[in-house]
Each structure stands twice: as structure tokens, then as C-alpha cells.
Length: 120
Image 1 (tube, one colour):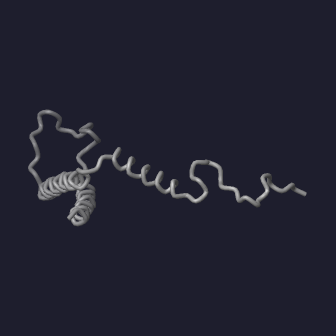
Image 2 (cartoon, one colour):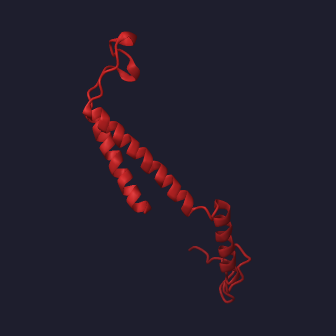
Image 3 (cartoon, one colour):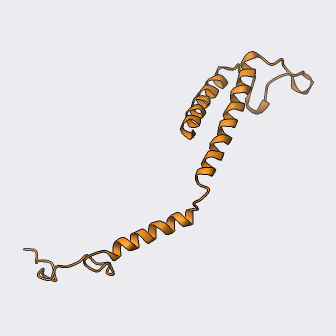
């Protein structure tokens, strides 16, 4: 279910980017230099503007759906529990070590020399 929703979400994101780029520019950014000012009336909504709103609403709905699906999947676990499980598993693996997993040094074989050989 989440994979289908994620795929739809990504397609909607790409379509929304394309639709926004296709719209006509109406002046400077943040309304600066747009002309008309306060006295101008609101422009009539174009078909492209309506489609942009529909795609944006669908994008927000899929975002919320993905958030809810992820929260349901992760509801039983917390990050601390997952970290605790991995450290317990790694400690058990070290305890099973045949060379005595207490030491941080690599195990040395009984017949191996204690010091490295001299360089010649």
C-alpha cells in the first residue's frame, strides 16, 4: 500500500512542478513589481490554475497518507528499543567468541611471536 502511495506521490510531485513551470509569470517574486497594486481586482481563475490547485491538494493528501502509513508501521518500535536490540545481539555474538570476547585486542595464537618481526 505504501509503495503504491509513494509512486503516486512522486508522479504528482513531477506533474506539479511541470504545471507550475508552465504558468504565465505575473511580475517579480513575492508580488514585487506586479503592477496593478491594491486597487486591482482578483484575476479570473484559469483552467491551468484550477488544475494546479487540484494537483497540489492531491499531493498534500498523499503526503498525509504516507505519514499515517509510516506511523502505523513504526508504532510498536521506538528508536531506543531498536538500538537496545542491536546492542544485545552484538553482545551475544561477542560472548560466543572462541578467543574470549572480553579483549579489545585481536586474539594471538599460542605459538605466534609476541612482537612483530624486525624489519631488515
